[in-house]
Image 1 (tube, rainbow, N blue to C red):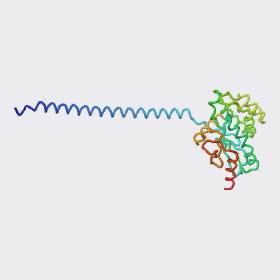
Image 2: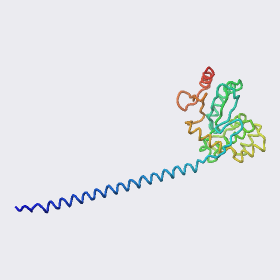
Image 3: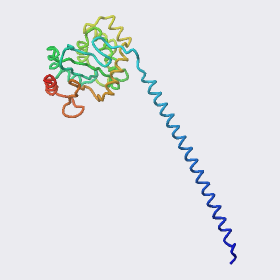
Image 4: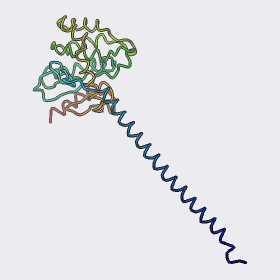
Length: 252
């Protein structure tokens, strides 16, 4: 057998190896390019997402707060009270009305005695249950108009007494204005406040703040910053549970 008989096979093997190496390099380059493109696309998507979020959540500054309140709620009671009860409510929430009926009078006695101050947060969680009229938002903003007149507490009671059912259109602005006058609000000023939506941004801000603060439903009750529940998360506390929490806070 000739000594050179294996050279063609060897040459073919070397050529094949070089071709395979070249293809591997091409795959690596292609994969790298695809990876860079994917990262770039994701980065652009993230930027677009942030831009869209920011464009639809622009804060309205300066944010108007009603008299007797702040940008996240309205106070009822003496500022010298030792205990603050935060009540997160929605004027379309039937359980809020029920809580007001059962536990409200007990808390009110403590407010009258000067030992408790209530910090109401009228949220707009249930807008989706008002057939497109955003009743929760409108009622909340109207309650801020009542706060300007020093009548938040009275107006809150009137709204609960005339609470519309969930999945209805809610009360009209005309009705909200009429109930404000019933509560004692000055007619012209209150009407303008409601119709102009003066506190619409206030309602949106306090609702957003509550959501970010892990308030998942209404009514939610806090005593000196601690959530009071009915034994399980998101359950409504009883009158006794709220009273016990207030008394415990008073002892501290």
